[in-house]
Length: 519
Image (cartoon, rainbow, N blue to C red; front, side):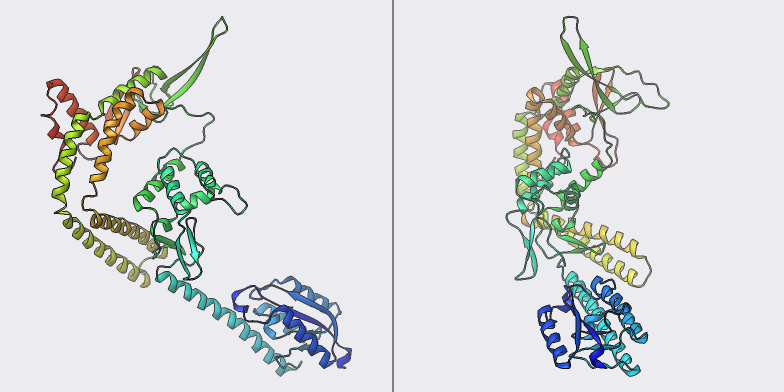
């Protein structure tokens, strides 16, 4: 009777981790052919599949069962039952075909089976053990990943600017690419670069897709919003502190996020905006100032183009009658305004001396800030622990926990950076202040000979400056915002210059710029 039975040889090699120790396809076939020859079994076909059996849906396995139902064979030879099934659906199909006598025999060199009630019971146990092995392996893998996350190690592929060190199984800085990634953050933080511009810049530095093309805009956006670059990482929608070396400062990262948020609300226009668009608002109705180009054709054939700036006039209740102003006239007015915020070089020299003295004094008192920050860090850590306890006690839902955790982690990272800077250099404000002095001095040259784009950029960097257009005149006004200090340094500088010009004595008014230590 046994010689009348026909068999399929079925060999499977999974690409998943759990099957790395299983015999290879070639070894299985050699063993199964020898086994069939020794047992005098008739082989109809040899079927080879390289796919995991964790889930149903294997094509070759499914085709084999259909061929058995069609009568091509009535038996299967495999190395072990786990080669046939590691899930309940496929295992149930085998047992069902045995019940329906479509499959009359199963042969395994490493497992005994007879087509009896006891044999099918033992086969079901073998299938169950195979499924348990897969499930248990998945749980062990997830547990290992969670432990890795708790140690501050990101369990995934390194982002651009980092590499996976296979020797230490950690993520380290890619010394060649990391500087370009930092430069990409700095470029986007300026606010005048698009995602495509960043992709093109990285492409010139050799950072492309596997096909040699520039990175897609979605990839650039993911990179610019990835907290991995400042020392944290996102895993399962939660933020964790990483042990890897950050390459981007948290302050720069926050600036990039602000720029991305601002640019995300922009609407696509049909024409390219003119240079001064977005800089002024209408003094009558408060709407934005737009630009329009007009072309004048003369009888002699000459063509002249003019750019006018005017209110958008889209207010629903106010009928705006503010007249338009030409671009050259507006540029001249903006240059005069910018000149009012320029710092005279003689003032800069005196302020530099005050700055050096403040630097010396504050080196002695910087420890106060560090101690205060350390206390705040301890409070944040305590809040994080209480938040985790509340989540584990089911007092708060998962989404609330994740949102609040991300907020506290971000604040903690910012404080850590500030403490680090104060530890290395007590007067962290000194260098920014020197940079401000240089910027304020350079405004004079920009106002005199700078391009329209440079004039606009200089006006944008004056904190709190609102520009309104009224009767063809650009007028500066301090922004009414609770986020600005009572006396913004730029407006205080302008006011001090006006007082000095009126009295004719510059240096008597110079101390009015100083408020305690620093400007």
